[in-house]
Amino acid sequence: MARGSDWAVKVQALIKAGNIDAAIAQIKVAPTVKDLKALQTGLAQAGITGRSRHLDAAVEDNLALLSAPRLHRSP
Image (cartoon, helix red, strand yellow):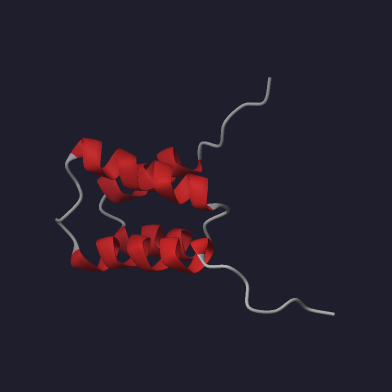
């Protein structure tokens, strides 16, 4: 059985440590939509959502970018 990604847990640890800039940088290069949604859920459960406007915007923006269908394919 495949083990789940612990990316969201690591980014959440960055946020709890107060390193918001590093967390936003990691969010911008998030591996999958599933990982971003796991991070969003974890932040909501920890009560962190709403504390940092930049962090919330980064999660929402990158969820939209990763969720959007690709407009073209490279050759």
